[in-house]
Image 1 (tube, rainbow, N blue to C red):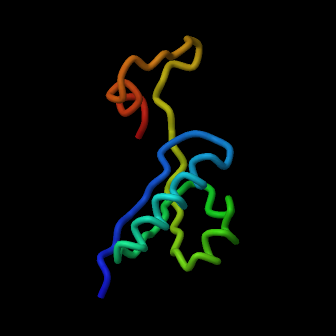
Image 2: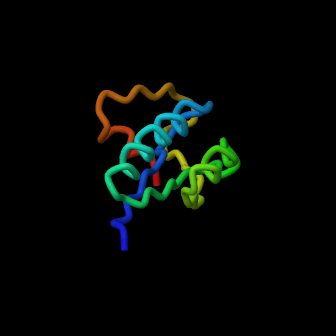
Amino acid sequence: MSKRILLAWEMGGGLGHTRRLLVLADALKAKGYEPILAQRTIHTLADEVRERGYKMIPIPTQISLAPRNQPFRAMTYADIIAITR
């Protein structure tokens, strides 16, 4: 039985996050791990993910707690975590 490892996409748009996770997943698979990708948009590059034999699971949509009428600037990762649930 291989060791499973969860690779999660936190935020962002486009395909860059999935492509980076696939590079990491390939390297982990070569070392004997079973990568599982968790992301909001499971259709993003789904064919590439399936071709490599990785499982992909959906994660909930982020709900922002940032004030709607004021610009938000995160200074630290903790700032981002503080406004999400």
